[in-house]
Length: 374
Image 1 (cartoon, rainbow, N blue to C red):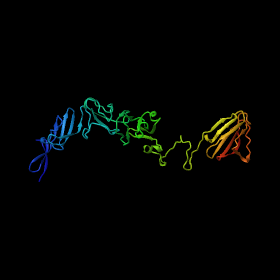
Image 2: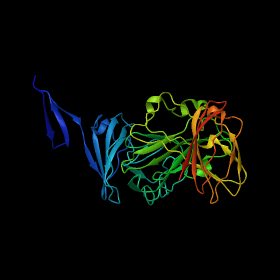
Image 3: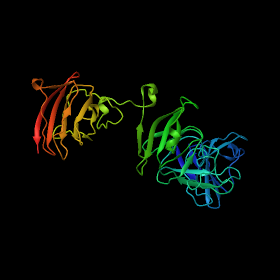
Image 4: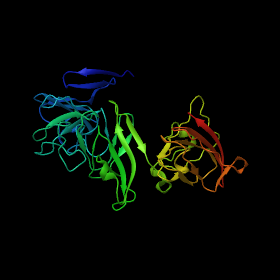
């Protein structure tokens, strides 16, 4: 048999011809009122029928989900232009309302006010969505975009804030975060040992019962975030421990006893030391743990030296500079050993320089002197 579809201007629907009769299969309507439960199959509506509700500058589109007599179900599937001229997206039921959940940076969101309130609740008790989302008056519409360069404070009560690069911030209830500022992520064990806290004030992230977990900052227009994560053995999965393969550049500051895993290759670079120095007053202690080089200038007297030994074997250099008179002498500790068991006679000229080279083997200083540099 021949089946055909054609537009029926008489009934305003789309009819099916099956060779015997004409049956209205869908029935659209354009009306100044919204559909009700009584707009049902008796009136010719079926599942899939559309209803366009036109009011002033706004058009709201409904679709029939169930045409049961006296209990018809109509879903609002979208709007085009609210009373303020905002473009509203076509989406699921109530497409303009944003509730708890994820906000994505650089994505536009639509809202409507609730009752007589000026703003809908965007996942929080506060309605102060401000210049990001604006909707004034009862049941009014509005739209806005969350942007990392806006410096706006975003309020929420639960759920995530997700960047367009899919980086997700999971936020504890009641916290606020400035999306363009540095955010400090920390644990406050007096509050919870599992729930992360946020603050934009560094002093609030450290102190008693607080463990700083990470520091984050948005650095690019499209929501790229930088994180510096801190972790110890006790933090488990809260932080990422650094593996050998992760290390690119290392700055040694806090670790006073670092160890190398192999030979040190300085390539085409020198290795420098901070030179210790002192002017004699008759008795001088040299702490070789503080540096391998020491420049000593005699005062107006002879000098007696004591040494604080380094922890491991090493090479040391001691420069001895005579004062403006000269002929000053030095007495060294018993741990100093000289060639042929004979201490050298220091240069006597004013401002003369002698250099003592030492090898420390954890027991003794084996020394040799180069004399009379003028």
